[in-house]
Length: 284
Image 1 (cartoon, helix red, strand yellow):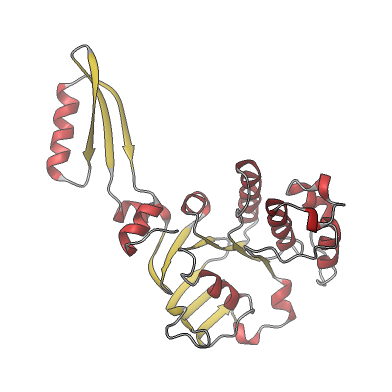
Image 2: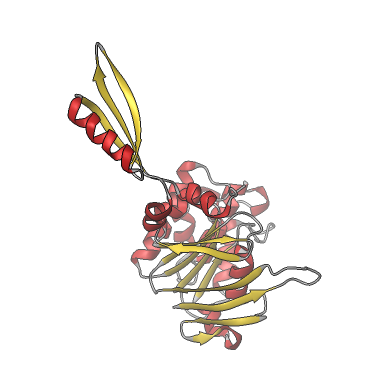
């Protein structure tokens, strides 16, 4: 569906590449997470894929077509949600969606229905300038669905949302996957990526440092831990064992065989811990 080969991009007056020779492929119906801290190059890649920045070096094909040859049909088939909402503030939320619906030839999803799905039905006649940041973010997400696109580009879709409305947007993203839509998700929210993405790429200083399923990344890079609580005398004791160390595995086996176990829990690394291990820095 989306193929990127040896993509390079440098901004004017910069001494280094914002995107530095990256390659990846996204299958149809896949949620592909593009993860990294601010300044890693995530938004630059999305802007190239959506036609907002020119292709300087490398090859990009979307649905089999070179990005340089995109035409109106390309924009009919994509939906884009930006981290910073770009809406018409003097129009109401519903008027924004009605306007954007007129830009597409094909009939998409009803604006009133979308307002309801992102829980903005009660605010549909309110001007966007009076919306909170989270409301604007939800409206921007709804706009990305207005043409019922085949491909979604989502940049930090949960930015500014509280947990409840965040769950609403996550359910809508999962619905798009069920409809076999392809989703390119850029975020520094590792918990969101772990929950939603089929595969993720870690971007650090413009380069991809790892690309795999969240599960395999955590298993191959993180340290697996087992916490054991057992009866000792009149009370209980707790011990932690590493599954990556042979001597610790033997100690765990001895503990289980010689004590009455109360609880036993495995703990795997988080995606953020794996990212720190691979890059030496966090996501802030």
